[in-house]
Length: 474
Image (cartoon, rainbow, N blue to C red):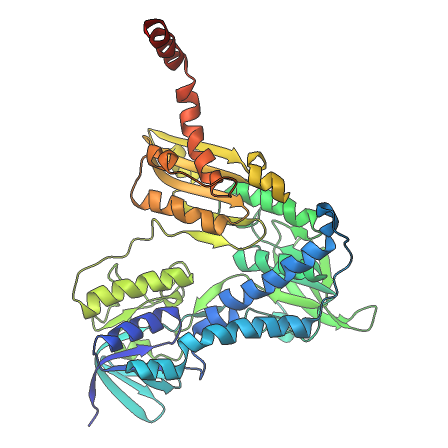
């Protein structure tokens, strides 16, 4: 007879691990199933962590190459990809300890390795093991989406799963996709010394982010030697020997032109990992975008919850953790809590970084009392001392309350959180201007940005008239 468990969590990525750890520490009988022996999900092994380690190595190479700007002797950096790979591995291994099987077993979870599949509404199988539970949480994540391009599957290409362990630095690389992953990796490999071309179907980089920020980032990449192809659809990919005898990929575009490169990176999108779950057996609705959930993160089978990339909602680690918190509230504490994506910050870790939270400029302009204010990074004293002048910041207000922010600047990923708090609480701009920001820190950007709101008001004819009256009286 199958033993009834309190909770079975399928997937050992960010969302699944949060739910499993909290549930186990609260005394529930938890089984955690992960396809791979190493837990932590794509973010730890093939995404957030290795990409940021690679970006750091690339940033150092860029600094060495341009050290003359700061009065230091510069030259071509000597890039050792084996050493770079070790830097990446060290970062993964250090964080892996917190996501290890041993740690979760110590917390009280039973950890199983293998592919889980539903065989009923409340029954899951892993190999020969059958598990019945009061509740299930699906957190199987996502994988790289491969577009239906002629010839693509017949050539060797890279995705996020194999791009962080290249034995040698490619001489040239074509990146399909100008979204966050494509932009970050294009800049990283370009700075390491690879000739990089980005091919994007949309008319600009980062189509889901503010256009002005996108254009500034495009200028930065162009200045660093990255080739940008916009409004271009790839119709065919082939492979053959290049002039130097190395195997090259040829990418043919819809306008008949083509590009050749040693490496091809596909960074166009993500797809949910659901194929092996037998969701139909459990009565769980899903689409090509992901498992269908309500705002409580419940699936069509009310015993089953889902969180993370598998839901198709904003494939970000911090969103997976946010969703996991909603699952914990509803499943464990029986507290009816609903998800809200309106105040989730998004960050692209290029240099300069790009970050946003809240509504868009277009949405703000549609408001009756919506106003947009901006401040140029080059006017910030710290940016001058660091010679980091590319960028702008925008603050969006509705009747004096902060409803959105968009930044491209050094450390934008850190700066956005102060503004996210403001958006979350619909704070008045006065609250932000009243906060003391240390000088000369980059946080002054938020202070200066908020100051733009009061600039016209402070120096208006009415204010000048009032000051004149007060001056005569006193």
